[in-house]
Image (tube, rainbow, N blue to C red; front, side):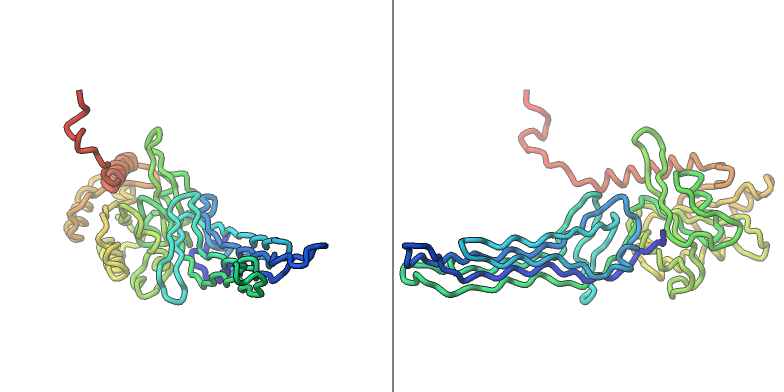
Amino acid sequence: MKFVDEAFIDIAAGDGGNGCVSFRHEKYKEFGGPNGGDGGRGGHVYAIADPNLNTLVDYRYSRRHEARRGEHGMGSDMFGAAGDDITLKMPVGTIITDAETGQVLYEMLTPGEVITIAKGGDGGFGNMRFKSAINRAPRQKTPGWPGERKSLKLELKVLADVGLLGMPNAGKSTLIAAISNARPKIADYPFTTLHPNLGVVRVGPEQSFVVADVPGLIEGAAEGAGLGHQFLRHLQRTRLLLHLVDIAPFDEGVDPVAQAKAIALELKKYDKALYDKPRWLVLNKVDMLPEGEREARVRDFIKRFKYKGPVFEISALTREGCEELIKAIYQHVKAQQVAEQPPIDVDPRFAGGAPE
């Protein structure tokens, strides 16, 4: 399936049905009185967060979505039927924005969440609504109200706890395949990842986190070079970034430190808040270094990169160091989740413990 993380759609809720002017006509009842019913409500447009979807491709080719209008009121006190509602299924993580103003309207963050994105118009009143002691034969009615119409931009940000950063061929796809259930395309040429991949990493019973692998960044990404800049938005909801570096590049003329600095610079240019997120350094492909040179090469890299945070030495291919990395990530993510939980209100009478 083609991955699409941005789409534009037009939606229209149904108009309300018109009210009816009618009078009761029965034998032996010369003045039967008004009996025109109200019009029916127009159909609403709902959106539901569907965990089985992971792309907005359905909305790339189907842009117009319109609910049915309500039926008109009729005589004999008959109200019009409400128009049928429509429900649009969207991936979890979809942001719904007004395409004209740029205002964010909704964020679909919870699986199964249902929101009303366009309300149908109310039905108009029939003439039976206007009957009174001094107006016994009203001929007034009101038209149905129009339903809401909107032009929307849909933007998908994948929901992941951990995001992988790095140059093409840094080993991100190999790492996510080694530690999770994801099976991304892996090859010996740089640009194998063309869209984000999500993988669930199992640490233990009921212990897991989600990791996202996005296309590799290249220098100039913040200005639009390469594919990586198109998917940096997917890292904005993560709790932790892993900066993956190829410590043993195949081309001897490539400087891993210069590549790492370029990635950090592109991240800062794109979004300062994303740059300020917790970011760990993961030196990959250490199995390609001779045993006697490994420690010195790692020390030299850290010194030249001027990095002071956590550093992990791994080989995604052989899984060396991966278990330690997984456990450290889980502890960090768990601590973040606990910190983000709202405080529990405690009755001040029991603040010191349960009464005896």
